Each structure stands twice: as C-alpha cells, then as structure tokens.
Length: 240
Image (cartoon, rainbow, N blue to C red):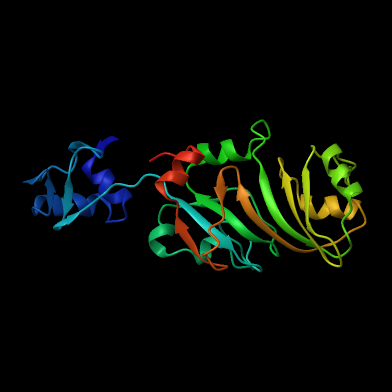
C-alpha cells in the first residue's frame, strides 16, 4: 500500500501527524536506511523499510482476532451497562477499532471473529453467502431422529412463524441432557435456542465451534484471544 509517512505512523498509533512531522525534522525517521525529514513523502508499506526512533515499523491496516467468547460478555463494541468483547482486548489491539463479526448471545460461549475488515465481515454475514456456523449444544430433553429430520426440513419458529433454512442436527449423546452439534446457515436472533424451543426442548449450554473454514482454537480459555494465522486468514479470504 502506498501512503504518506505521517499517515502510516499516525495510523500505527505513534502520534499525531503534527508530532510525526516534528519528529521527522529532528531526524527520527529513516526510510531504507536514509534519514527522511519530509513526513509527507509517499512510501510503499510492502517494499520500503521504515524506522521510527530506531524501531522498524510494520504497517498494519487490518486486524483479525479469534476469541473464545466467555459467558456474561456481550458481542458489541460498547455498552453502558455490560462488559463487551472489545473490553477484553489489549490497548494495542483496540487501537485498530475492531468489531465482532456477528453476535453471540450474552450467555453463549465460543468462536467469535473480531476484525476491522468490513468487507470480510459482510462476506461472512451475508445471507446470500450462507456461511456454515456450527455449535456444540446441550439440551434438557432427549433429542430424537425425528428432531434431526425437522432440522433438515427447516423449523417454524414460534415467535414470528419464520421458517428457518434447512439445518444439520447431529446427535452426539442422547439422554437427559442430550449433546449434539448444530450447523446453521443464517443468524436469526437466538436462532438455535428458538429452533429447539419450537420442538419443546430447551438449550442449557451453547458454544460456537466453527464459522465457515475458521475453527475455534480449543487451547484458548474463555476470554482469551489470538491473532489469526496466515493459513486461517487465507482460508477466510481476509486481507494481509
């Protein structure tokens, strides 16, 4: 990407453009080993080596984070009353103004992608894309093969008579409670819970384990997060 030195450095959280301009005049900026006192100079962030006060600066435009969202935290950028997933980030990651891609209910755990890449977010959430989202679910009553068939056919939700798209219900352990995996391709409000409710069952634990090609890193404890690997980023279609 080609942009001005002062914009690159200020966008990286190293100071205002006015401060960067002043530091450039003091000789604090180097480009490819040569002191550059003109902070308005255009550089190529992929080819040019920029140093600021002796430190190599790598420009980052987009940030991609995988979080294991804990219960009790809401999927939002800010809230006047509850803690948000953004509150769990380090200041250096908050700087890029990331936002959660889609929402997980306050009491739902699991995979949450946090980024500032609006195009990727749109691609993952667009109903036209029909991106698979898989959940580990525990429900109070026994799940049957009849329920599996109902999920395959689509379920009419009680509150608004909306019929869901066909979904996959895989029974892992039948009993009280029953354990299963559910894969849906849309993201209606409380959808998984409402689908089971329509079958006179109740979700007692819900955890998202995958979204499209992205799978939850099970080494992440609830509330922990990490940056996506290059392999994960390529699979998702993110931007380097």
